[in-house]
Image 1 (cartoon, rainbow, N blue to C red):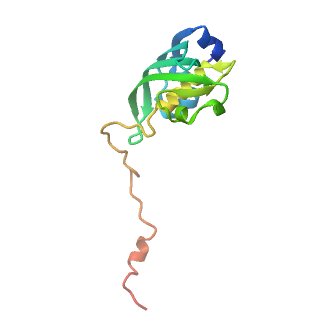
Image 2 (cartoon, rainbow, N blue to C red):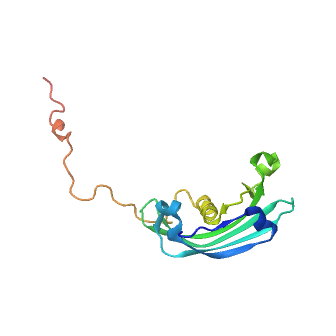
Image 3 (cartoon, rainbow, N blue to C red):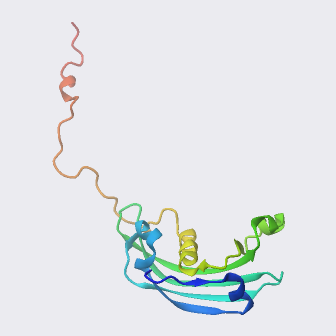
Length: 164
């Protein structure tokens, strides 16, 4: 993305800030290798709040459709993207209890006075993508299409069975 979008994570949450907009798919620089097409935009919404534990949180929503590269046929496969994440801020990772680490309902981030929102959104997108996207059914590309060359070992076939 051409412009950088930076927030102070704690101030944003304390002030119950809200941020929304569109993010061009072509701006997802770290994800380009996974995409078959970079057309279109994703919509996002970021809301700050204080959680039940008193820690600052950000609720992130991202919606849209990505065209991922099918791992069978290498063509585009539409992937509906629906992300709903609650990210809770901690002073450092040592502040987390074992129960919090094992809790899958939210994720933790270290507080940041200069949190790059676009990078955060792209991180969440990458984490949500399937490891091997593919169509329900598609034709596998034929290997070695074209004229079949003779095997370099075909000359040895004539020697098989001859004893000297």
